[in-house]
Length: 101
Image 1 (spheres, one colour):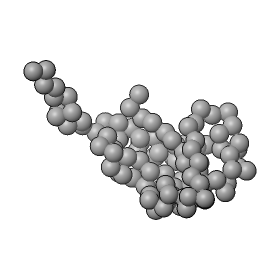
Image 2 (tube, helix red, strand yellow):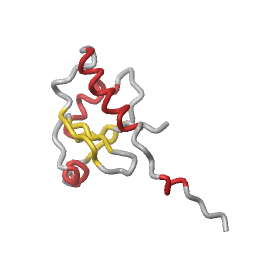
Image 3 (cartoon, one colour):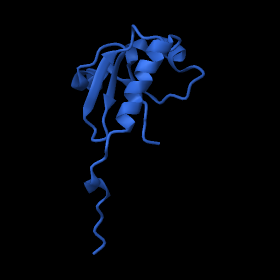
């Protein structure tokens, strides 16, 4: 699969974790306050931020998901379009160059 989804939450929000992952298959990791929230700090993240990376691992799109609803067809289509657009990015041919010498 060429699309991967991963959630990273602050440990201060653990009481809401069940609401986030219940009934879903969603990898969820915890960023720790004891360590100064290194992931959130490095990514300059805020609550409910979404980051889409391209095939090269470079951030392509960032937005706050709060105003979007999966039950709204327009919102769903917009976010799905972003994902599909990243999937169709051309992979440089050098990725497939293999030297068997």
